[in-house]
Length: 513
Image (cartoon, rainbow, N blue to C red; front, side, top):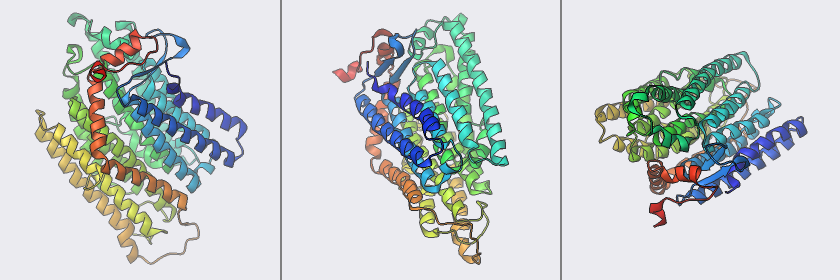
């Protein structure tokens, strides 16, 4: 049993109270410990990802209690990749928050930031559905505090809407967990994968209801239409670094769907047959269409970016809903891309806000630092719209290729290509108004406007550099996500490590040969 796997949960859990108790009034100390903690998370996450890259499944049993009776954390290719992605994203978001001064506008930003990381990383590593619920609540509480950071009535209203909608999801989650436990007597995911297959066709009503409830809960987290209403206002009103970190939160819902519906309720399982393609694919296509239509109709830059997040999640869910190894591999590649692109666009919108009176898409005097900000927006827009040569284009090609053999191939291709065209028009319109038409407006004297700091530009540049790397190494990344998908569709080694061993490491038999 390796102890490193619990470090991504324990480290932010210890840092957060330390910052509150020992450095409450010292922003410099808070920044130092927060950055050091995130750097340590990046190093630990990289080590875990390297250790699982050969197919090894890592197990940590809290209190040395074996599953299914004890709490377990499990690390495989998928979970460690998501932990690494979150940690790297958190580093650049934190640097931006420090460079822009957002962290100094409220007293507890860094503590809440660490608690948020604890919830997200715990959700990726847990091997138990109940503890997935617990980590969902941790990240919900921390995200609410971050959302209303620095106050304001509009932000408070958006925060209340966000919390109420997610509390509905939490309630449904509890109902689902109760139903699953009543039917199977366990909530450990590996143990559930075996017990669900033993349910006879005459006794499937309860578990089928639970499977549908879980899908609804995860769809809320992933902002899937028609359960997306909370996202546009919540993300648009949140401080830019917070919204950028939230780019990974919708991926928690996508991760949960991939994990649960490849291990516990796989497509071939008779108990839940038809659940994926009957409901999930149409909802994903609607999310993609509505999200990119929102990009075209948005009247402010922050809402434009928020709707692009909905559209990108629609693209991810289109691939996931096909539930084939190729489609899951495409979805995982696109998850990395959309997380980095969405976070970069939220931070770029704050660069615009810093040097402009507001974020309304109307001609106004040129923003301070106009050339560099415009260049970054251009790259971010290309990435999110899916134009070549960046990873968004490659990701869409992978999704289209995965959908080629589907019975609904025509619908998938029409919606994906049509929404891409709409998003191109929407981003082009926004960029033209913000940066081109600004030169036709007389500059106004406004002493409150400032030029963004170099650290802010460096943080955004780091995310753009990662997007470029994701493009250059697309072949290797997609090869890795393909092996990841193969591991997900052959979960027996994962199940064996969790249920049958006492903390040993295991490799899939095919890879040992």
